[in-house]
Length: 604
Ligand code: F6R
Image (cartoon, protein in one colour):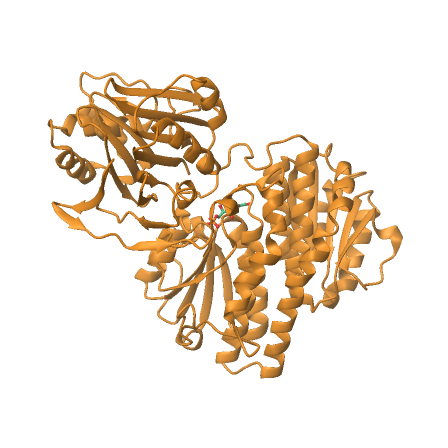
């Protein structure tokens, strides 16, 4: 949450900062601002709304200077206003911040004497603290003193008025990456902002100051220089562009066949899942008596599908936990527990805290993560990287389907090493996973049909998803996708549970998206669909292709190719993503940046 960029080098800083902020905008888009150092001092500009508003405000006005900082905000502390937009300024200090300062009140009471605040933010109070502790020419000392006082999470980029062309950075929990290239020194919340210049970067270690200058960049810890550990991203600038699509979301929906291929293929050896490339040992699958899957939002929904797959194959108890609950529930974990955390960004604070808790209790930890070098990836015992490439749209799509593929691979490997599934069946699972990935093309081919039928949803206020078993797990994902970008109230229900209360909400014309791809419970599902149809629901039915269906049961019927039951969520998810996407498009909403949301939730 909140995007940060800093640059010192040979290019005009304001241009570099604006371009970087556009790449980071998915981290927050309530307001944006930049501050640039020049021989005339620090010049700052802020605007409410997204980065293009800031750009409009700056107009063609030249903003001279080659060193500066920029921020795009997701409001936590203080409403959406220009005063609360970053950068914040106090005395000789101008800074940008991502995170939350928990002891801001105490800091203000002790260090704010005689000062006035312009904003309602904790970040401005941090600027007050840095300025109070700053003695001319000794920025590092001020930073070390300040971080010994600050409580909470932070990534700061700081300009000191009397130190020309230099940016100081420090972080705790909140992410910062950096790169030194021929054009100068860069720091940012994530690598998407740097990718136009380089594919080599490093993650700023915690408790280390990063100093950016035009000619050099270095890390130091209490006077000692620290060598950065370089990382490489295997995608380039085109992967982070819309490439002719109207929105990132639809581009990312279309990228799923490739993302699945890239995630699955390196992990298959002779038809059996193999994690040699990931260096994941079989011990963590053998020596355990329970699995806990911990994640948030869409990633947690991937876990729900994973639970069904794993329990069926491995016959081991698997629970799926919402990370923000798990960490405060004194969970039952021991050194024979495998905790699988799932996170696209690898930075979600509750998932990270849950991972730390699991480690402290002695569990084996395995992270399924998309962003290379992210905090969760670095802190977990083992990492399974999904290869979805950068996901920019706030609504997660391709990251979800590759997480499903990861869950299949893990479940099957676990069954294999525990010797409870015959090789033949394991090979069949692999074939089914390949077919499911191929079947995504068939779902994408339904795009025009889905575009038309979603006109029927745009005026609706409430909508329900129903399914049984793995289709219920998928319903949860369909529901979050639709509500987050179309603003239609939506709920997911286990189909058999409807008549225990919720069916009272089904009246004439209420849409029900019924996912009925599981042959095992198909007859039961049909009964549940009859119940809603009898009460006037507008039914969009999703089944496997060759399943016989009575036409009186539905208003619209969409199918996925024939597959073994547990593999249908991959192509069916794509149908649900397209339904959410086109409903939002027809309503004229900001698909990629839905209100109040941001990608990468780095606050609790
Ligand atoms: C919904 C969505 C969110 C994320 C959740 C976890 O479309 O994207 O629900 O899935 O915030 O994020 P990660 O996976 O980055 O931990």
